[in-house]
Length: 85
Image (cartoon, rainbow, N blue to C red):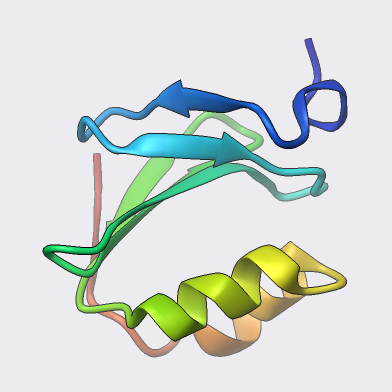
């Protein structure tokens, strides 16, 4: 099943965070833990990263962006500490 077919569906991520499937050529799904500010990102190649101390507003903008991949590359990847899962 492709990310486009699953758009709006949810699944449990590696870090136990509920992830939303995206319609994106680079991001497969994202999940967010409000308590810790951790954004979990699964890329279409299967790799999963966690980004730390990401404000909820930034995650909202990512989810509503015309291009989630472009938003991620411009506003999240260069600004937040991360680790590969």
